[in-house]
Image (cartoon, rainbow, N blue to C red; front, side):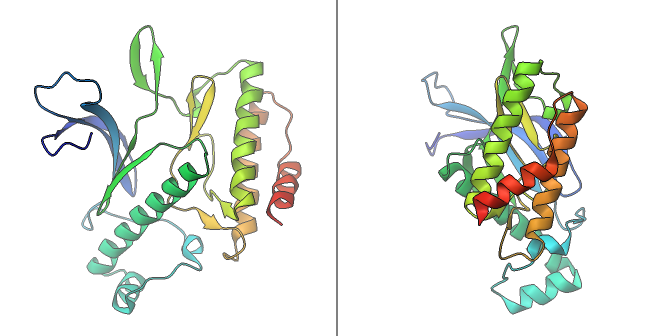
Length: 237
C-alpha cells in the first residue's frame, strides 16, 4: 500500500525482546474496499535508548564500520547517544540482511520499509479452521516425520545458500525459524555476519549447525552438526 492517504493502525504486540519489540500494524486507505488497499505487516522496533540494553556480542560487529568517528566513540563508551546509534545500526543491519536474503530467493519475510529504528516486514501466517494467525516458531511445532525431514532439508538449503554468498545467520535456532505450513521462514537477521571477513565466522556457522541439528535430533531425526558444518564449508570455499 503506497497511497499517501493510507493510515497505520496498531493491532497489538506480537513479541517483546531485550532489544526490540514486534507488533502487528495495518496500513490501509480509509473507506476503500479495493483489493491491495489494505495490508497487515509486522513492525519491529528497536528500543528507545532509555529502555534499551544491547546484549549482542561485539564479535558480531567485527569487521563492520561506523562512518562517523564520533558515533563510533559514543557506541564504544555506551553513552546515551551511543545507544541511540547502536539501535539504528542494528535496525539497518537487519534491513540490509532482509533485502539481501530476499534478493537471493531465501525464505525470509518480505522487507517493506525502514524508518529509523523501525522495520516493516511481511507478516508470516498460517490458517487454522478459517482463522488467519501468526505462524508458530519451529520450536513450537510438532511436525510428522515426513514434514520434519522436509523442514530440515529446507533449512539446510538456506544455510548452504548463505554460505555460498559468504554469509552466516549467526543466531540460528528453532526459535528464529517459523513453521508456515509446509515451508519454513527464517527471521531475526540483525546479526548476520561475513563468514570470511569476520574472524568468528566459522565459529558462528558451527554454532548455527549445532543449534539446528540438536533440535531436529530431539525430534527423532538423525542428523549431525559436524557433517552439516563440513558440507556448508564446502559450499563456501
